[in-house]
Image 1 (cartoon, rainbow, N blue to C red):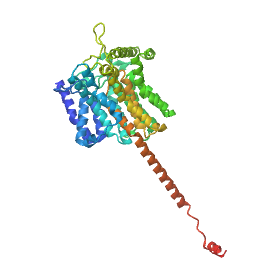
Image 2: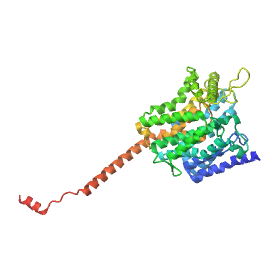
Image 3: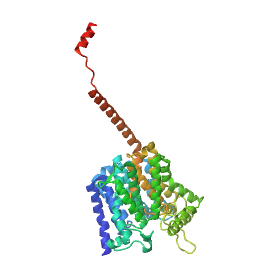
Image 4: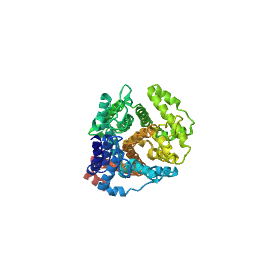
Length: 480
């Protein structure tokens, strides 16, 4: 009975998600289908389909939005023209095929990996690329990033007080181990996600966007007719109560960077934030730096979290050494990328970037880093000077800050969500269109300035008409 209910929910979301896209229309419908589907569908359970990967919430969300777009907006889908910026995503999508074939695992294994990447990463990214055509579209995406956190607030606060049990109450099973739910003096919510760390990432991402919108465009952004200030404060509180120390540290670092940029206008701080994963991984793979100081700082807050970080860093080094034996395309699937220890156990791996390097080598790792970092980097470079702190670009920069949390978290965890992937597609569209939008904005500003000058001149003329010459004065002039 339990499994039948889960199957009914997953299959039913094809209709519900597609219906949201059709009836809400365009970008709003796509964002609603992504947020609602990913948040409420059951994690880690699926439907076995013949000849295809197991149908889980990852596929349910992508299938639903793709069906909805095909039925309601197929012309937009067909009119998409890829740009050079889309090359990293294209390489990332097909990387599993090369890894499988070069390791003798066969084409079926490779195409299964390609199929997974297309629907889990490619479809949400494509939605961000085809639906972002104006700055107002970016604002819609940023608002939905905040809404994603707002929806989670009551569930996160309830579980932080009553214990993570909502998934068990609704779907009849626990997807987590009980010892993982006690953190920082209370319960760490898991809601309907794979782990409490994923909830923390979800909430921190939403909070980062909300806080940036607050400090840059508080008077222009409202969520459900409420001012962004109050929503940002409540979101921040709920994020703290999610008790994910890593996400809180990333949110604090991202917010600090945002305030520095807001105060000084130095874009270099944002560039450093965006490029941090690439620089860090380059250093770690070459093994020229030991992160002992970083773990010592974490240990001063939480001994257990420090041990967890040390374990992840150890995995990083072990798997990287193993991956360097097949550096170009990696070891492929079937857990061949995980080294076998002396006692016969297999090394656990948590970080998405480490998993990618082990499975798909430098081709997969570089393309994945290009996907999560290159759009943000180019967007920063293409927005002129201090305009990056203006209200016009606030939604785009807010999304970029949320994605910075996501990209750094990918070094230690593997909780990718379609919300983050469509955000990457949206920022890629901003990077592609930034210069054109700036020319249009500049032209509009010049037209507005000219109109204001014309209005001012007409006002001055109406208030100070030309002085009339009296008739006697005209006669005197003629006589003279």
